[in-house]
Image 1 (spheres, rainbow, N blue to C red):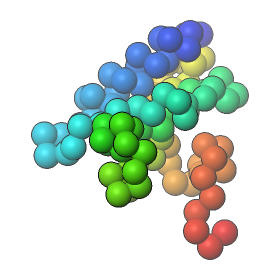
Image 2: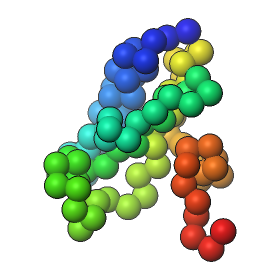
Image 3: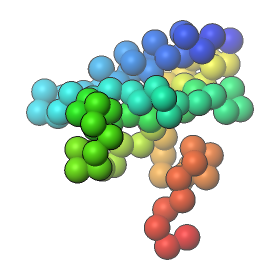
Image 4: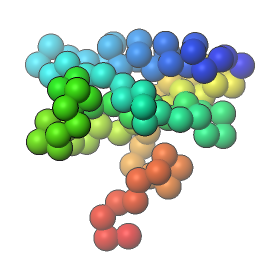
Length: 92
């Protein structure tokens, strides 16, 4: 079992490792993060969106990072799991 601070660190490292040079700078939106059923749900987006909150600065398609606090496993959320991480796709 890992602590929430450890899970946050894993999420930050995961996001940094996934970023490519042609992407804008990304950051986890910690004010929107939460732990549910032992999983840290860490939404992220562009640093600019995090600073401004302006939806014109928001990147689309940023599925949250999930950190399983029992195993330390880190992954991006899958669209199929939308109910767990709190988003309802359009038309449903």
